Image 1 (cartoon, helix red, strand yellow):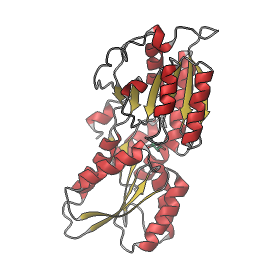
Image 2 (cartoon, protein in one colour):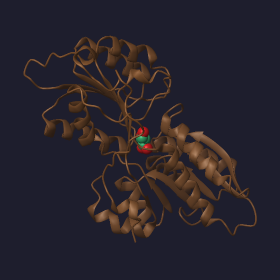
Image 3 (tube, protein in one colour):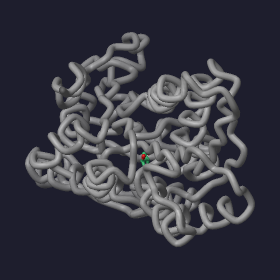
Length: 330
Ligand code: AHR
């Protein structure tokens, strides 16, 4: 059976609080009241890169939704580099786009460029990943997942699975991109959850940069250095999929000799789960495009929007993956 939360697909608005006055009212002086020459709204979007299946699905969702909403999209691929994103945002400011949205590669170091956008009267929407800026007036809203919760769901599942363990359970962790919100938060959520059972120990933790190649290379090192690995927690499906190759090459059976937990639930990850190579996935939805376009229009129209909008997500076991795969969109 699918979980109740899983059956309620799609995005649900979680209001974390209304915008404070002046931040909420995106009046003309704040956003600029000049429509694009052809009357279309222009959105400048800076994407992290193309590191994973999740990212590809997210890019497709944004491009398709912009077309469907009649919004002119200026799309930039930062190729995993913060400096490229900063450059892209400055270009968008120069081009006087109506709204800027971006998925920050890392959490820190955005205040200067966000202030430049604010001074230029261009509202900014954060998608997928947030920033650690203390000044919340630098962006209008955040739309994306609760990454801490995803890590927590992964950890809680493991605690339940290993509740009868009498000795140490050795866990290795493949972290996402160093300094990124999902890597920081998933590590924290998972760590907090497994603290419930002192037998559960993370014996090695290293970044695989959210890529298959990274996951494979780091898992090879883990396997060489640690004769007894019971569990792999990978911060995304792609690193888990790369790790499968390393585990098989080392003569071990993924999903049996080593329990594998990942995050995302993209198609290839779900297939691995259905095939019994993965054991559990916490979902992270990449389908942010439709709601982003809606927010772009609202922000530009000066409507009040919530300061944080979270996607609603579920979890999958192997049986649930088998049931979901035929209708899975990504
Ligand atoms: O920010 C979301 C994360 O980034 C996804 O979990 C991962 O696959 C991606 O690269």
